Length: 349
Image 1 (cartoon, rainbow, N blue to C red):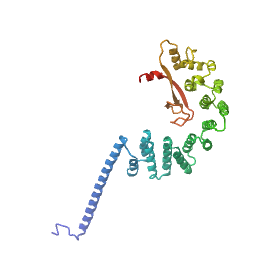
Image 2: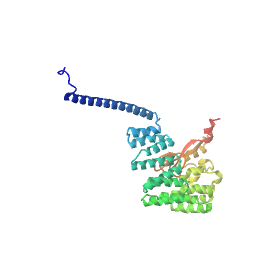
Image 3: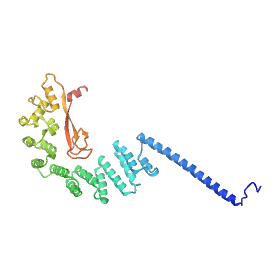
Image 4: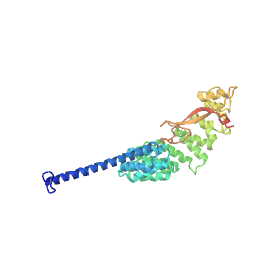
């Protein structure tokens, strides 16, 4: 028997037992790792499937980041799906949750910027302001934070603060000439001490120095000082505000001055207020003039879109600041023919 089996006191038996134990432990460890890996892959595929269906929840993003070490940039990209759907609250929840797990200061600052931007887009102005001020405490040269604080100050009509921010941006070598003119113009318009007449004259002088603010000045004059607008019509480019002229009330139009300006004559002939022009250089006006002079009446009208000269995005409503790229006074008006109001509503009868 001793020749066939190792005696338990035999040194070879001890070595064999150790190797056997190592093998068993290794096997069990490997099997356990395989089990964990398969389980993780299954959970990961489940999360990806949920993502494909657009059903990822806030906690899922944190799970991907902390458990599967998915890169930070990838998590941010995935979280942006909420923004694309306009679900700002969920995007905010993701950013807030990530802030509790991210340790790197640069990533924290990036997250705070994203959080501030999302608050701003969602209309949470005070929260957005608080976030940007927090960023500036440890990164005083953050231009993004300063520029967005400028937008917030503008929306809140806090023009003195806006001018201070412009000075800070100027010290950081940012080109803020447009912002300075724009904010100063808004400051005059919102001045509670100046009379409408004083504002009108001051705005007109500011326009003579910088025609960038043309539309702001024309909008104000058409609302509060129409006579000053018509008496200074030759200072303006009426083509750039054709939509304002088109929708102007009949009683607010000075037809004596209209008849001295070819473009205005074309506009109001096309509108049907007068019958002077026979044609127009602007295609849409020419069509309307032609139909007005025709014995067969066609119910068509003008509609207007606005194109940002910076980002080239099309918008149905005019805004002094492009909602897509935040550029100031970059909208160009584009006229287009459309069905007349009564024809569009005749199908409802």
